[in-house]
Length: 114
Length: 117
Image (cartoon, rainbow over all chains, first blue to last red):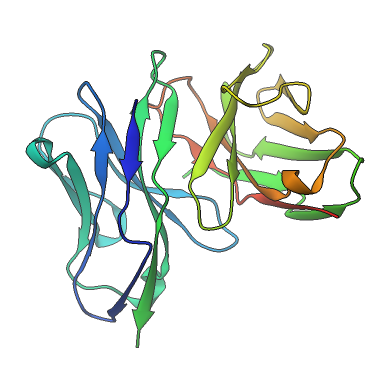
């Protein structure tokens, strides 16, 4: 069965420091992978997605993610975080025969230290 | 990006009553809408998928008679929690897409916090 694991429940980084959020997936075929951000009072926003092609994907707000099939990973990175990046981050995989189902990981809460 | 709204943002009700949550796509036509449930510090779990004018497709383990979904127009879907009980307390999130597949982005609403006393 398809699944997504985010091993880090909560991460705190200093403003200006680099960030890497980990994501591992389990999926039999070529995965369709997503990263979403959830801020209080706002809906989930898509940061980036990987369907095929270049394994390094650029997203909005300066985020990028790298698909590594050998490690079943799709880690999210940002070279320098800003206080406004504090939020909940979800990794997800697209699945289902109709290609309409998104399976989310449990999320990683990011706090920014001033 | 496209905007999806939910109403109400939070609701408190007594056990045994029914609660309706609205999900609206404000600036696009949503062929497909999705309803998720999110428990504290947990992931979003897909409850059901609805296509405009059709019956909703429920995920395994979701009681269709308890969680009634109506998608009567291309801009509105409603989720009614019937005879709500404290265990139904949760954060309910809808998303909308202009197409059925996830190849087309799902746009998420801000969520509705339901508390059943």
